[in-house]
Length: 179
Image 1 (cartoon, rainbow, N blue to C red):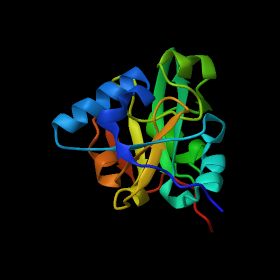
Image 2: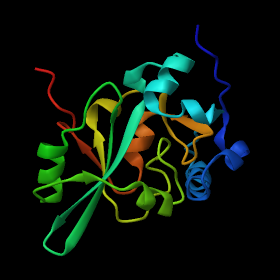
Image 3: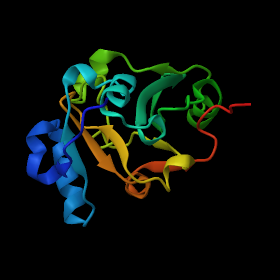
């Protein structure tokens, strides 16, 4: 049996968010875009653990991968958002988008430098200029769960909100084919 989540207005509980995420949530609220927040057990913040413990479907949980690659001396970043039920095509689509030969997950120390922690990285509050690649399958979904920057909470929003964020590129083929 799963534990229930208590969804609350995120702007009223910004203390549960990483500072940069809280600022972004406030900026979105000014634009009339509201997110909800639920406190979670930090030990259950990783996607699979979260979905199992709280009974949330994997296809409505969003994995946020921060990756980078090099082209010459130029380091290129991307943030990839995809349903947790699918795998991002890092070696194909993401490498092509960044015009690099190899791609890797950003090391934890660089995640910590954003003010966020692994297991709760979110597209909200990341450094400006990082392209955000959003799998098109998420655009029309409601009730999506994303990280809050800290392992103590998750945010709930709609795919339309994610697609409206600055720097977001909607990508039709971001996830690997299941065939």
